Amino acid sequence: MKTVKEAEVRRREILVVARELFVKKGYEQTSVNDILKIVDIAKGTFYYYFASKEEVLESIILDIVEEGARRAEKILKDKSIPLVNRIMMAIMAQAPEFEGSDEIKEELHKVENTKLEQLYLKAMLKRMTPVLQEPILEGIDQDVFHMEYPTECIESILLLGHMMFDCDVFEWKMEDYPRKIQAFLCNAERMLGTKEGELKDFIRMFGQMS
Image 1: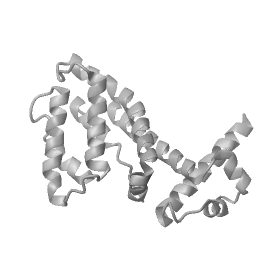
Image 2: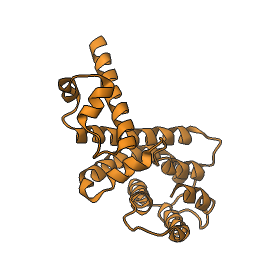
Image 3: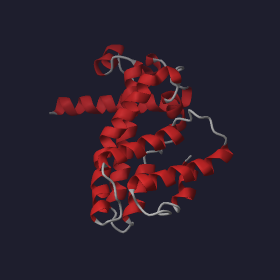
C-alpha cells in the first residue's frame, strides 16, 4: 500500500508541475526535460508514469473535468438554492478556475488538437451527465421540467454550451455575446421544458464567464 501511495503522489507532482509550466511557457515550448528538472526525477521515472508529454496534457484535461464535476456536485447539494438555479450554476461551474486556465483551453481547442478536444468532450459528458441526472429528474417530479429524454437533454445543453462559449470556433465579437447568451438560455428553457423566462437571471452571470 505504501508503494502505491508514493506512486500516486509522484504522478500528481508531475501533473502539478507540468500544468504550471504549460501555463507559464506554453505547451509547445515546454519539454519533458523542463518537467524533469523541477520534479527532480530521471527520464525513466517520467516515462514510467506517462508515455509522452501529450499524455500528461491528456491527464491534465481529465483533471479539469473532475474539478468541474466536483464544483457542480457541491453546488447541487446546497438545497438553499432553488433547483433551476442549482442546475444552471452546476453547468456554468465547468469553466476552469485555476490561474492560467485560458492557456490550457487555448491549447485544447487548437485545430491540430482535435483528439484532445474529443477527449475533453467525452470525459465531460460521461462525468457530468450522471451528476445532473438526479436534479433534472427531481425537476420533472416537481413539474418544473417537461421532457421526454432527460439524459439526452442534459447532453445537448452541455454540448451546446461548450461549443458556443468555450471553443471560440465562431470567433464572435464581444458585442455578439449578449444575444448569443440570451439565445442559449432561451433554447435551454425549451429543451428543459420549463416556463419562458425561467433562466433570464443568468444572462448577466453567464456573460461574465464568456
